[in-house]
Image 1: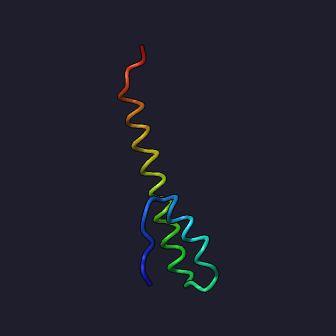
Image 2: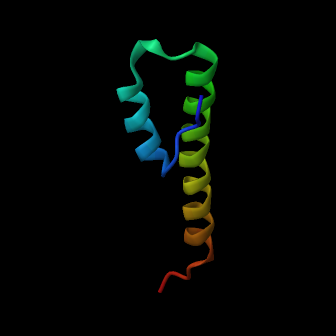
Length: 55
């Protein structure tokens, strides 16, 4: 099965549309990948916030 593509949010939308016909291991892999994408984005935003100076 092909892996999902796009941003984490786009992959979550694709997962919702995938339905119950998909293999559980594939669904788990795709969910973990999307969640990791969100976490990576959050980590990047946290780094940016920490480097900005407050005036």
